[in-house]
Length: 141
Image (cartoon, one colour):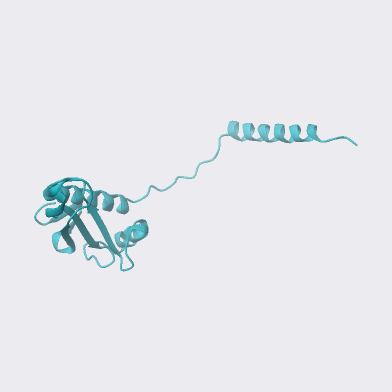
């Protein structure tokens, strides 16, 4: 994260004003430190209302991140991996950039292909052999 925001791609920067970053007490091991220091970083980002995303990017992000969004279209990420607040903050911002890059990636267009003649022949031969095997299993009356 720069002072201006988080760079997702060369052509997309999410300004810091669109991100809500807070710190809370983390659970788990850490001795006395865990009871005194708010080191867990929590980031909130309104995907649905973000002016930084184009309409296409917003639709793609909402579809891809649907299971991770709140009912209001807000993405909430947290990081309590490190003992220090600053390290958790950096790790969280990197995680946010990674999640957004993945959500905004344009899928490759599938180029329709045809199976080779050899593959078709192999499939038909296997199919015929299976039918033959079943025919042989039948009881003759």
